[in-house]
Length: 225
Image 1: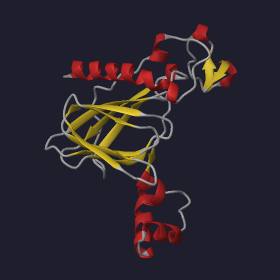
Image 2 (image 1 turned 60 degrees about the vertical axis):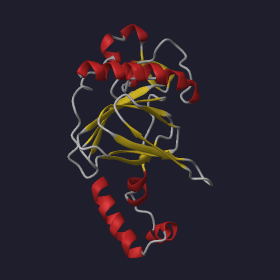
Image 3 (image 1 turned 90 degrees about the vertical axis):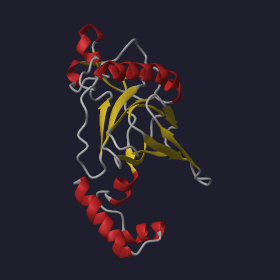
Image 4 (image 1 turned 90 degrees about the horizontal axis):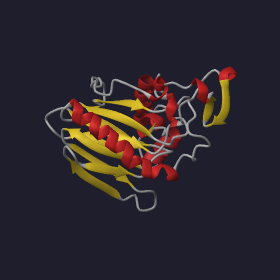
């Protein structure tokens, strides 16, 4: 099973590479290993870059995506990223990968967006109900039930989700067309912002009683801080 998971991950990377031109700009050299200490950096392209002569194999390597994520949390899911923060060699290459684990029935990767990337996801284990919503004014919902080996695409910037409807744990891998796709979880951003959004704004926007908004903000702010 582990071999299948890694094969799927590499296939996703190959598929997502065709989406790169729609997101991050092309690199200006063969590679540009990200570096935090600018005194040892040379070229600038997305992040400060290590001198190519000092690059090593470890800059392009990450282990551990065979290890299940801990889903013992309120939403019952865990995302394990493999982006430029974990693999410095991804800098400027316009691609990244995540492993997503879902607890048995009810594990949810809640509605969220990636502001800088299209996502292509493949299910390795379990059964997922997935979908995305188009932009205003249509707000059209596209959904599908996915089984192992099924693939689904979430267009860049659109709100999307995955929900485990099976009676076993589920696992998926997803490739994204950015070295740093970003993520905005809708509920956390709206009700858990710091400082908090004026409750009157949210009460009117969501057509809710202000007391309910205050309760939601209190809960999400506590979870986020």
